[in-house]
Image (cartoon, rainbow, N blue to C red; front, side, top):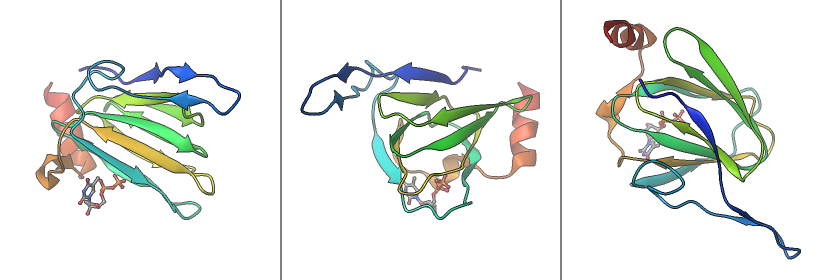
Length: 134
Ligand code: TYD
Protein backbone atom coordinates (compact mmCIF):
# COMPACT_ATOMS: atom_id res chain seq x y z
CA UNK A 1 0.00 0.00 0.00
CA UNK A 2 1.34 3.46 -0.89
CA UNK A 3 1.75 5.71 2.14
CA UNK A 4 0.38 9.20 2.53
CA UNK A 5 2.90 12.04 2.46
CA UNK A 6 3.20 15.78 2.86
CA UNK A 7 4.24 17.46 -0.41
CA UNK A 8 5.70 20.95 -0.35
CA UNK A 9 4.49 23.13 -3.19
CA UNK A 10 6.34 25.86 -5.05
CA UNK A 11 6.13 29.19 -3.25
CA UNK A 12 6.81 32.33 -5.22
CA UNK A 13 7.56 34.93 -2.57
CA UNK A 14 6.68 38.47 -3.49
CA UNK A 15 6.19 41.60 -1.45
CA UNK A 16 2.83 41.95 -3.24
CA UNK A 17 1.80 38.58 -1.77
CA UNK A 18 2.90 34.97 -2.17
CA UNK A 19 1.80 32.53 -4.86
CA UNK A 20 1.75 28.73 -4.94
CA UNK A 21 0.56 26.34 -7.63
CA UNK A 22 -0.04 22.67 -8.40
CA UNK A 23 0.43 20.85 -11.68
CA UNK A 24 -1.04 17.38 -12.04
CA UNK A 25 1.54 14.60 -12.59
CA UNK A 26 4.25 17.06 -11.64
CA UNK A 27 3.82 18.32 -8.07
CA UNK A 28 1.28 15.63 -7.29
CA UNK A 29 1.55 12.05 -8.59
CA UNK A 30 -1.70 11.85 -10.53
CA UNK A 31 -3.67 13.48 -13.29
CA UNK A 32 -6.20 15.99 -11.91
CA UNK A 33 -9.78 14.94 -12.67
CA UNK A 34 -11.72 16.96 -10.11
CA UNK A 35 -11.33 19.76 -7.61
CA UNK A 36 -13.66 20.38 -4.69
CA UNK A 37 -13.47 22.37 -1.50
CA UNK A 38 -14.91 22.18 2.00
CA UNK A 39 -15.86 25.40 3.76
CA UNK A 40 -18.26 26.84 6.36
CA UNK A 41 -17.59 23.85 8.60
CA UNK A 42 -19.35 24.41 11.94
CA UNK A 43 -17.17 24.12 15.05
CA UNK A 44 -16.68 20.53 16.20
CA UNK A 45 -17.79 18.92 12.92
CA UNK A 46 -15.85 16.13 11.21
CA UNK A 47 -15.60 15.47 7.48
CA UNK A 48 -14.54 12.34 5.69
CA UNK A 49 -14.87 9.14 7.64
CA UNK A 50 -14.38 6.90 4.62
CA UNK A 51 -11.85 5.37 2.26
CA UNK A 52 -11.73 5.22 -1.53
CA UNK A 53 -11.20 2.13 -3.62
CA UNK A 54 -9.59 3.96 -6.56
CA UNK A 55 -9.41 7.65 -5.83
CA UNK A 56 -6.25 9.36 -4.63
CA UNK A 57 -6.38 12.91 -3.28
CA UNK A 58 -4.26 15.87 -2.42
CA UNK A 59 -5.56 18.14 0.35
CA UNK A 60 -4.42 21.70 1.03
CA UNK A 61 -5.51 24.13 3.76
CA UNK A 62 -5.98 27.18 1.56
CA UNK A 63 -7.11 29.13 4.61
CA UNK A 64 -7.25 28.44 8.34
CA UNK A 65 -6.38 25.05 9.76
CA UNK A 66 -7.64 21.51 10.31
CA UNK A 67 -6.30 18.05 11.09
CA UNK A 68 -6.32 15.05 8.77
CA UNK A 69 -6.25 11.61 10.36
CA UNK A 70 -5.04 8.81 8.13
CA UNK A 71 -5.80 5.26 9.22
CA UNK A 72 -4.17 2.41 7.30
CA UNK A 73 -6.10 -0.19 9.29
CA UNK A 74 -3.20 -0.75 11.66
CA UNK A 75 -2.40 2.69 13.02
CA UNK A 76 -3.49 6.32 12.69
CA UNK A 77 -1.27 9.28 11.81
CA UNK A 78 -2.48 12.87 12.18
CA UNK A 79 -1.38 15.80 10.06
CA UNK A 80 -1.90 19.42 11.04
CA UNK A 81 -2.76 21.44 7.94
CA UNK A 82 -2.28 25.16 8.39
CA UNK A 83 -0.28 26.53 5.45
CA UNK A 84 -1.29 26.88 1.81
CA UNK A 85 2.17 25.96 0.43
CA UNK A 86 1.98 22.26 1.31
CA UNK A 87 -0.61 19.53 1.09
CA UNK A 88 -1.19 15.92 2.07
CA UNK A 89 -1.16 13.30 -0.67
CA UNK A 90 -3.64 10.58 0.32
CA UNK A 91 -3.36 7.49 -1.89
CA UNK A 92 -6.33 5.22 -2.46
CA UNK A 93 -7.21 2.64 0.14
CA UNK A 94 -6.70 4.67 3.33
CA UNK A 95 -9.38 5.67 5.81
CA UNK A 96 -9.39 9.42 6.33
CA UNK A 97 -11.08 11.85 8.61
CA UNK A 98 -10.81 15.66 8.80
CA UNK A 99 -11.45 17.44 12.09
CA UNK A 100 -10.61 20.47 14.28
CA UNK A 101 -11.51 22.95 11.56
CA UNK A 102 -10.76 26.55 12.50
CA UNK A 103 -13.25 29.31 11.81
CA UNK A 104 -13.23 30.27 8.12
CA UNK A 105 -11.02 27.34 7.15
CA UNK A 106 -11.01 26.32 3.51
CA UNK A 107 -9.91 22.82 2.49
CA UNK A 108 -9.03 22.32 -1.16
CA UNK A 109 -9.22 18.71 -2.34
CA UNK A 110 -7.74 17.67 -5.68
CA UNK A 111 -8.91 14.25 -6.81
CA UNK A 112 -7.64 11.69 -9.30
CA UNK A 113 -11.15 10.61 -10.35
CA UNK A 114 -14.48 12.18 -11.19
CA UNK A 115 -17.16 11.71 -8.52
CA UNK A 116 -18.31 8.12 -8.17
CA UNK A 117 -20.42 7.21 -5.13
CA UNK A 118 -19.53 3.53 -5.49
CA UNK A 119 -15.83 4.30 -5.01
CA UNK A 120 -16.51 5.09 -1.32
CA UNK A 121 -16.05 2.63 1.53
CA UNK A 122 -18.10 4.19 4.32
CA UNK A 123 -18.27 1.17 6.62
CA UNK A 124 -15.18 0.90 8.84
CA UNK A 125 -15.63 -2.87 9.29
CA UNK A 126 -15.65 -3.32 5.52
CA UNK A 127 -12.50 -1.19 5.30
CA UNK A 128 -10.77 -3.33 7.94
CA UNK A 129 -11.70 -6.52 6.10
CA UNK A 130 -10.27 -5.17 2.84
CA UNK A 131 -7.04 -4.07 4.55
CA UNK A 132 -6.62 -7.34 6.41
CA UNK A 133 -7.04 -9.28 3.12
CA UNK A 134 -4.02 -7.47 1.63
P1 TYD B 1 -18.33 13.33 1.03
O1 TYD B 1 -17.23 12.97 0.09
O2 TYD B 1 -18.93 12.25 1.87
O3 TYD B 1 -17.83 14.50 1.99
P2 TYD B 1 -16.66 14.49 3.07
O4 TYD B 1 -15.75 13.36 2.76
O5 TYD B 1 -16.02 15.80 2.93
O6 TYD B 1 -17.31 14.37 4.39
O7 TYD B 1 -19.47 14.06 0.18
C1 TYD B 1 -20.59 14.65 0.78
C2 TYD B 1 -21.73 14.61 -0.22
O8 TYD B 1 -21.41 15.37 -1.37
C3 TYD B 1 -22.08 13.21 -0.69
O9 TYD B 1 -23.49 13.11 -0.78
C4 TYD B 1 -21.50 13.12 -2.09
C5 TYD B 1 -21.52 14.56 -2.55
N1 TYD B 1 -20.39 14.88 -3.46
C6 TYD B 1 -20.62 15.09 -4.81
O10 TYD B 1 -21.77 15.00 -5.29
N2 TYD B 1 -19.55 15.38 -5.63
C7 TYD B 1 -18.29 15.47 -5.15
O11 TYD B 1 -17.34 15.74 -5.93
C8 TYD B 1 -18.07 15.24 -3.75
C9 TYD B 1 -16.69 15.32 -3.16
C10 TYD B 1 -19.15 14.96 -2.95
